[in-house]
Image (cartoon, rainbow, N blue to C red; front, side):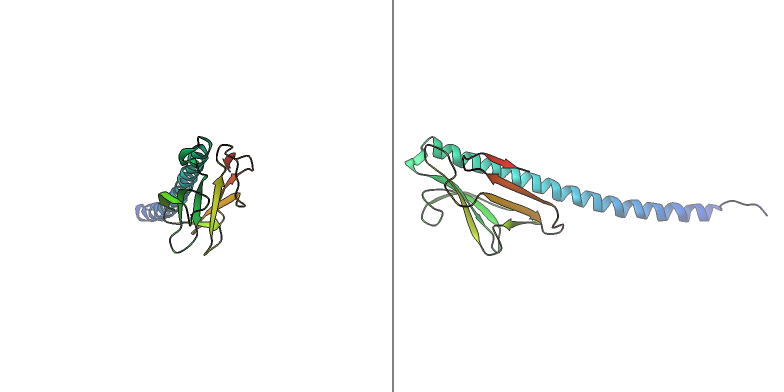
Length: 154
């Protein structure tokens, strides 16, 4: 008897390996897409915070500026001018990308990061915003604003 693989057996092994590779790469691409969306949203939020701070420092409108974060049915963030989001003037608004949610502020809660006019220091109690994947909860990023107004993310 001859030992070895028949053509049919070889094709079966290659087919199974192909299926495993396709399934594995789909998961890899999905994780990469979520990471890219998370990084992009963190970048936009960090930029919005810096622009709000810059508007406060330059005295734009002679009022404080800030960013409101709303963790509700539609997670969004919005720049505003004035002493708070509710009574202030609302400016540009963005919604978190699909598959991302706010961890902080908590569900059903809104939060503001407000910058003092002229000094640009953070004058709100909120200092951290955490965004995470709704699919992979361990995939998250924190945006922090120090008391001095330095915006950073991890």
